[in-house]
Image (cartoon, rainbow, N blue to C red; front, side, top):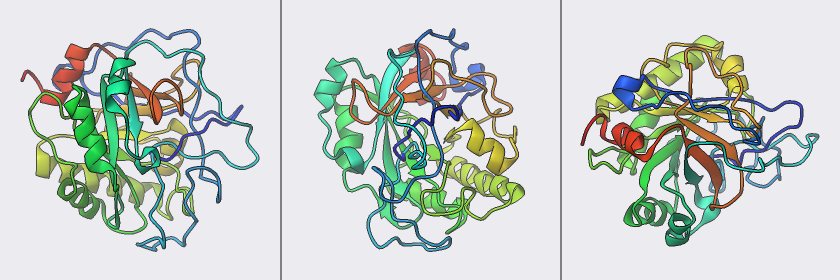
Length: 298
C-alpha cells in the first residue's frame, strides 16, 4: 500500500471488520498500551513512496507507480511515528514492489504469519515482484492475500476488480489464501477523493466489491483510514456487514473506526519494524484467520 506515515496531531484512523459468524472476525481485541501510530494524508511529490502527481483521469503514469498501502505525510507534517510495541493480535505484514525480493524465511522466523501483497493498481500496473512475494509468503507457511490500489479516477470499480482477479488477486479455498483487499485511500496523484463526490465514490466501491464477489465468491477486505472514509464516502456504513475492515492507524490505540464497523479485522500499526514493509496485526488467533481464509471451515 502507499507508504503510510503518521502526522502528529492529525493521525488518521481506519479499520476493517466482518460479521464474526460468517467472516471469521474475532471479538474486539482489548486496547494495548503502547500500540500503533496513525496513517496519513496525500503523498508529497518526491517523498519516499510518492509517485509523481498526474492529472486526474490519466490512466498510465509515465513510470511504474510506487503507490502502496499507506500514504505519505504532507511535507509540513512531523516525521514518522512508530509504536514502541506491536498491539495484541497475530503478527503480519504487507509489501509492494517497494520491498523487492523479500526474505520470507526470515520474516516467518521473526513471527510473521500472514502477508498482504500488492498485485495491481488501476488497470495499468502490476507489481513486478508479485510472484516472488505472493508465492514466497505462501511457501514458508504464511496465509497470504493480494491487494489492489484503487484509482477511481481512471476506470470503473468493476473493471478494476476484473483486472485484479486476472492478475493474481483471485481466491481459492486452500486455507492459506485471504480474500483480496481494496486499498482505497488518499490519492498520491491528485485530488484526495479522486474528483468524485461522496455518492459517486460509494458507487465506485460498490461496483468493485460486487464484481470481486461475482468473480470469486468472496467479499474483498477494505483498507482505508477513518479520515479518508469520512471525507470521501460521507462515512458510509453499508459495507460493514460484508467486507472485512483493515484499519490504518499509527497510534497507541486503534481509534474511531469508519461507520458500521464495530471492530477491525486487520490493523496496520506501523510503516516499519520487525518485518519488511508495513507492520500489521490480525485481530484474533491463527485459527480464526484460517476461518476467514476458508470462508468457514476448510
